[in-house]
Length: 204
Image 1 (tube, rainbow, N blue to C red):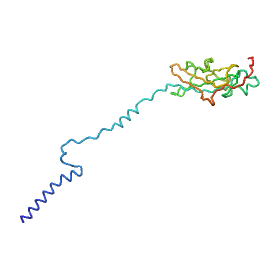
Image 2: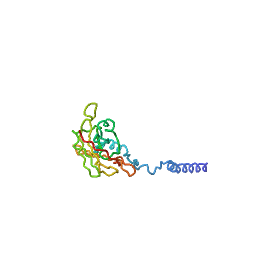
Image 3: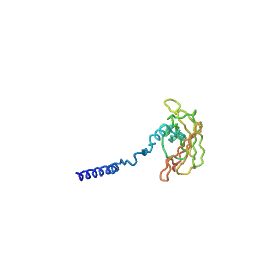
Image 4: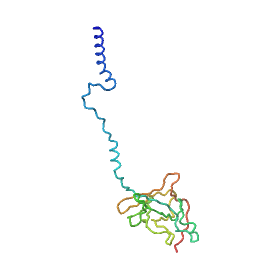
């Protein structure tokens, strides 16, 4: 009987001793029961996203300049004018008129800008030739028509054959600007003077 009591006490002691080990193996070590639980690091992702979402978009500062180039009516016979003038092209003979048709758009509003909003629209040819500032108006004068900016350059009779490079710049009343340049690469530029000379026709 005494021997049985000793075995029971020993078994109880072993069971009690094993409890901390079992707790530790499950992540429940009671040696840290009195410690303040460690809080996970704060997740700032939501706060950062909210801050980003409230930022206003940057104001668009560059105007959009849209350009096409057509042959004008200078030195075109009156009978040929309906079919040979106001035609989009990129190769011009000497004495032909290169007409620049320009639209300027405010990218912030999508609105096309007129002479009430724009201070100037200029064409600077890289060959040094002078081109008058563009003017805003309706073309043709009689309806149906459309309003846009235009200026022109009559190619001199002694102009060299080759590419014509330029920069067209629009400036509004607030000081914003926008530019347009033609594609320029040696094999095929957007604007060219070819080896052909059109006879000069006196203006009527």
